[in-house]
Length: 209
Length: 103
Image 1 (tube, chains in turn brown, purple):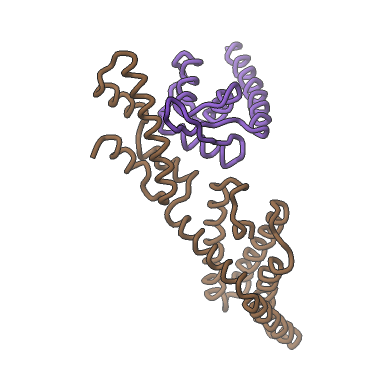
Image 2: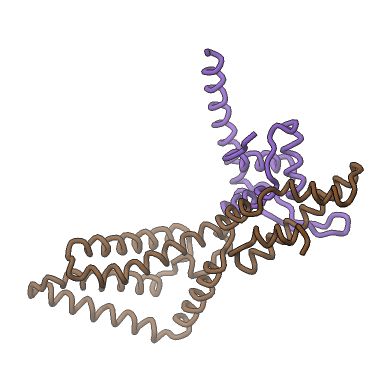
């Protein structure tokens, strides 16, 4: 393995296959340009390669920076999974209605418990409202503009944080709430990173949600 | 000299004159600063990707000496950001110069 290969291996650690290919291409291009320039100034091939590699700097530092701007393996996997889920939901229109029906039933049940004074009904109503908003809005409105997407994501985050806050009010259900919400929040966190790393013009539909 | 935080602005400045590829951008920054602003070239590309993700620059492929190279050009948003950054830097630099001059 050449020194450049070693550098590339370190610099592209944990990056997705596409990101790795992109880094490899640009660094190889850069390395060859630097080597040719050094050889043009009279350096030997070995010296030119050594200088070009040294100019690239620490591969681990480059890796840290690359991971902030390019998709990692886990993010690329999440993109694929989300795209597949959206495709399934779009192909089967009954699935959307089934989800919506579930949220409506839950809301109705929550409201009934609330009226009869059940303490845990507020939590149920919160869950149902969140489900309704998150499932119904993309079904009836095309959220494909940055402004609509921002509003939708803002509402989604507010709902998730609202439910999390409620878990601390009613501690009896906190284990259940926190288990469900922490996963949703973690997914949102990852999706935020993906959005930051992808130019908006290249966002697939599911990234708007 | 540590370029932390200023590299994106310097890249925008280098691209404001003409589209260029990564190596040429790095050389332009080093040459124009007479070697004072030196940085590790491996960190140039993450900065380029960040600027591209933010829509301040865009990349395209061009053939040079029979070889396809990835080049970058500044966008309209990038030009506006450069104007803003330049004004901020001038104000900051003037303030620091004033303070140091008083000492």
